Image 1 (spheres, rainbow, N blue to C red):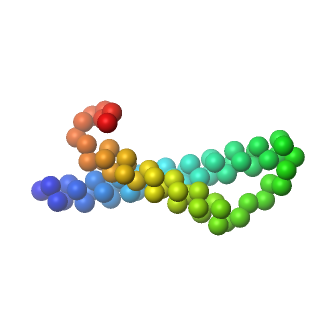
Image 2: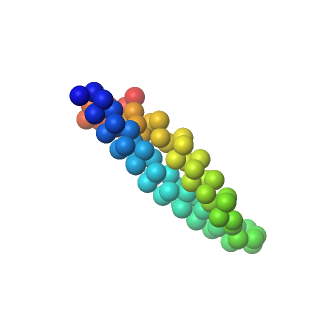
Image 3: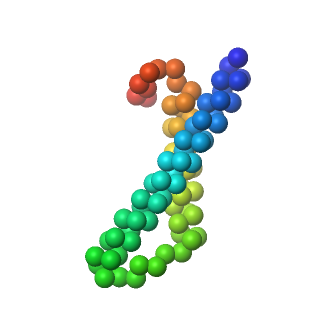
Length: 78
């Protein structure tokens, strides 16, 4: 039963990390664009840069998201 629970926790954790990473990347790019508009700079961005930000967020959020999905506590802190 622990194997099934682990697979479910990994799937939920990775899914949560992907969603949060993509939302974070969109918010980051929006904030960067806003700052460049205020600073009167070049507001163009590359897709490669946006993809790198999203991948960076997803990779670093995944371990914590899996740990939270594995936890049986109602409000896990650690």
